[in-house]
Length: 386
Image (cartoon, rainbow, N blue to C red; front, side):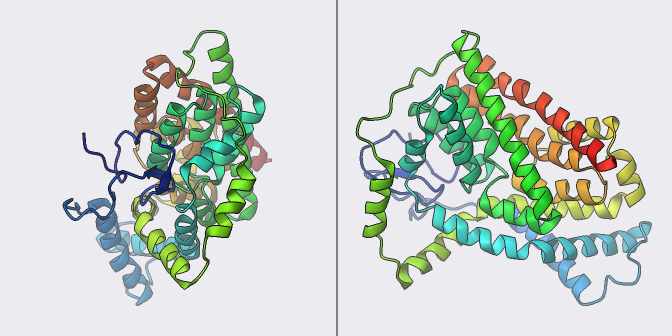
C-alpha cells in the first residue's frame, strides 16, 4: 500500500533510524521514499487554499484602494455587502499578517525536530506527570488539527496511553505557536493566555478522566503500550543533535522554504476561516450578532451547535472565535467555538476510533471534554458581564 505524508494515511512503522519528515514536523523511516517531492506523484490543486485566497485578495485590494469606503455600515444590497466583506477581510488580514509570518518561520523550525523526541518527552503513560508532558507537548507542537492526528495516532501506536493521546490531541490544534501569535493579534495577549491556560486544563482533566476509565476497565487499555527504553536521555541526545547541526545560511533558507511548503495545510484553513468571518460580518449586523451569539446560555448553546455543524479546521476557527469575543462580547462563546470544535470534530473522533479499534474510546472524547468547555464558557461569559 502506498502512503503519503501530506494526507490522511496510516503513519509509517517505527524504525530505529529516521530522518526529518517533509510534511508534519516528525520523522519517517530512512528507507521510505521522499514524500513531498516524488516526481511520479501528480499534485492536486488545493482548491480551498487558492479559492479562499482568490476571494480575499480582491476584497483586500478593493478596500485598500478606497473602493469599499463610504458605506461601511450598510448591510442592504450587493454593494453594501461587498463593502462590509472587503472591510472585514482588510481588517482581519492586517491584524494577523505578522502572526502568519512568524508562524511560517516556526513551522519551518519545528518541522526539523525528529518525531521520536516528541515521544521521548511524554514520559510514563498512566501517570499525572505523563499527562502534564503530553499536554505541554500538544500545546507546543505547531501543526494543524489534521496534522496532529497523524502524530497523535502514531504516538498511541508507539505506546502512549489513551489519556496521553487524548490530552495531546485536545491541547494541540489551535494552541500551536503560529496560531497563538495570530490569536494574540486578534484578541490581545490577555485573552489569548487565558484561552491557552484553560484549554490546557480541559486537556489535562480530559486525559486524567480517560486514564481513570481505562484503569477501571470501562475503556480498553492501549495494546501497544510499552515502557520507555532504558538509558534514554533526552537532553544529552538533543545536545548532540544541536552540535551536529550547522546554523548557516543554507539552514535558515531551508527553514523558510520548509515553513512555506508545510504551511499550506494551515494557511488553507486560516484563509477559509477569514472568508467565513468576513462573510459573517457582512451578513449579520453587529446587533443581531450580539443577540444570537451573546453571553447567554442560549448564545453559548447556539455556538456549540454552530461549531459542531460547521466543519472548519481549528486554524480557520480562530478569526470566528475572535469575532465572538470582540463583536458578540462573549469570550466564553469564543472559547467554546475553539475547544468544542476540536472535541466534536468527526475527523478526530473517527481517527481515534480507527486507532483504538473502539467506538467507546472515540465517543468518550466529546463526553469528557464538551461539559468542561460549556462550564468554562458559561463562567467566562458571567465574568465578562460582571
